Structures are given as C-alpha cells and as structure tokens.
Length: 110
Length: 110
DNA sequence: TTTATTTATCGTTTTATTGCAATTAATTAA
DNA sequence: TTAATTAATTGCAATAAAACGATAAATAAA
Image 1: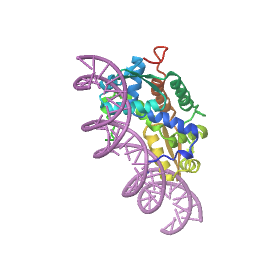
Image 2: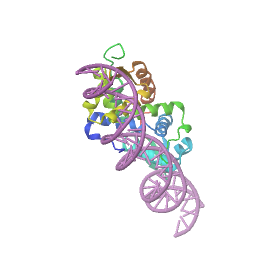
Image 3: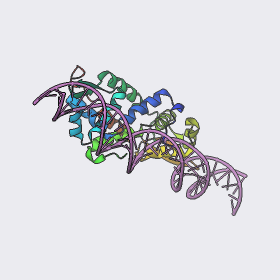
C-alpha cells in the first residue's frame, strides 16, 4: 500500500519515526551539518555545496522547516537558514529516550 | 525520480541516513521498544502486539536484521529476536555524533 | 520601469516503501 | 507419514518520496 498505519502506534512512537524519517536522507543530513558548521547559510550556498538542483534543496529545506528544526530568514532576495536551537534540543530529548534505552540483561538472545 | 543520489554524500552522511531511515517507521520503533522491554521476543508475539499482518512484521524484522540491529534465533518453528547489543552501541555512536553537534553561537539566525 | 537575482511552487517522472493475501519452507506433534 | 504450527518469501496494489524542468513570486539593481 505504501501508507503507514500511524493510528495503531503511540504518539511517542510516531514522533520518533517522524524525526528519524527527516534524517533518513543524506541531503538533509548534509544540510543540517552545514548549518551547524557555518552557523547560517543561504539556500543558494547549499545548492552549490551539495550538488542537487535548487528545487530539490528547497524541498528538503521545507521539510526540515516544517518539523521546526530550522528557521528561515528573508534577506533581500536570499533566504538565510539556521538551526532552531530550542526545537533541536527538544528533538534530541525525544531521540535520546529511544536510542539510550537500557539493555535489560547481559547475554544476547534466547 | 525517487532515487537518492548516495554518491554525492560522504560515507558518514549516508550511514547516518541509513540508520535514521530504519527508525523512520513507527512499526520498527515499536518492534525495537518491545525487544528492549521483553529482552527477547518471538515474531508471532510482535504480530499480536503491534497489529500488522505477519508478512509485514516479518519484512520489518528483515530490515532491522539487515542493518545488524537485531538478531534472530531459530527455536523449533519459532524465531526468537533480540537486540544486537554490540551493533546497537555502534549505531548510537554514529547517531550521537550527528545529534549532539554543538551550536556555534548563541543567537539564532542571520 | 525594466532587468537581474534568488527562492518557492507546480507538475511530472521515476523509484521506493508499505501492507497484505497467497504460498512456501521448516520444524514439531500426532 | 501426515497434520499442524510458525515464519519467510513472492507477487501485487496503493501510496509516498526524490529529483528536476519550468515557472512564478519577491526583491534589488540599473
């Protein structure tokens, strides 16, 4: 079908999956790494840096923005993007809860 | 096109994306949470617990196994699954490097 | 006002993913 | 050996995602 049955999972499970999914593409990973490294970045810089077409980068930026992980700031004809620090921290909390689960025993399996 | 251009990214970026993608579906999040909670689990238990068809669960298990995050152990007609502790730890290292990047300055943007 | 620059949006094509019914494979129980 | 149980595989339909050309929108410069 190609359609996730979100309604049978907890909100937390869906939230983890939604955050993870946005990191599930190397272009978005690359964009975020750039924003961390450069502090802020114009859309055009990312196009040059990453090597995808401008509409493609724009679309990836839109998804990151939709989840609140980045902010865009219009400066003339350009748009300057940067990490949304507060939301990034909140996301980290959610993901850590999942990734840092403790392993209950010592032997591996069955 | 619908095809990720993996070759234009670093190995690290692709690795992060590959791990993130497997967490990008709530069924797989749910499976992993169960394996953490129950220590180990039969495929059938997961089918009952999560509420997807058996082939669907089996497919999600396959993906988790392919990345090495879980192990399967045949016991009679059943298969017992559990977290692969070593690979889980290695995955956490990769993801932490990405998620725990430092924010360079204090003000937000541009 | 006209032109150039930059980014967003639209529409389309291609590929990937999700989900399941049907079937197969493997093992155990009768 | 035959029937039952459990999980994997196959094949398919529906939906989502990735990529980009063309175009629109918005602003700045000439």
